Image (cartoon, rainbow, N blue to C red; front, side, top):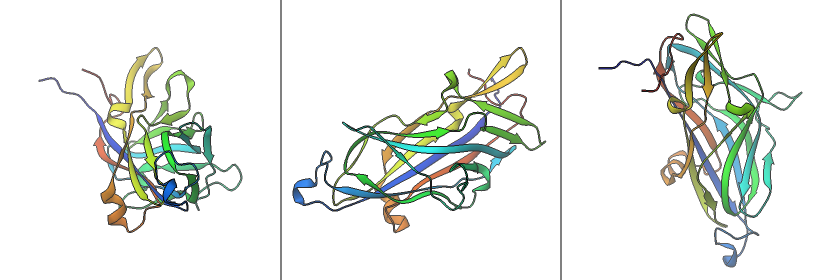
Length: 224
């Protein structure tokens, strides 16, 4: 049997949009006069073998079909008041703790192509239990994470979506002349989740969660 040392982190982002305004003629997913309110937060769960996983988010963008990307300003309580970024240790957000990115952002009803997260270059890293650090690099110098798959927001309707960010598939170890390097190749999928909105009692929150475990920095993940 072939044995592999893996990082088993699964990050789930729950996106809930509460649409408001608009008449009955605005209720289609492609309606342009209806609007929704969007809030976004982050949470996480422990990962064995790693004690910190850091990212710095500088912007969140929504792409509605037929429109330019809408950049969302980060306004949560943990956002840096000087540069407007949010530096997050995902593993510190355990036990259902949330770090809010923004609250009650107005969005236009319609069909959306993706959600994109802009990251600050050189800030993504893993800190292991032995205090060694491994930087996470994005391919082709693209400091962003983007979902695959579309989603929609109807006027006068509250909906919830989950972005499934699977770091088990997204983090890949490669050997370089200077030693092992860890690449972050984002795998993010979005799907509707009506249960989330009902269970939380609110439909205006976008959350990021992670669960899993990992081991030694010497060999995190190898394909095959």
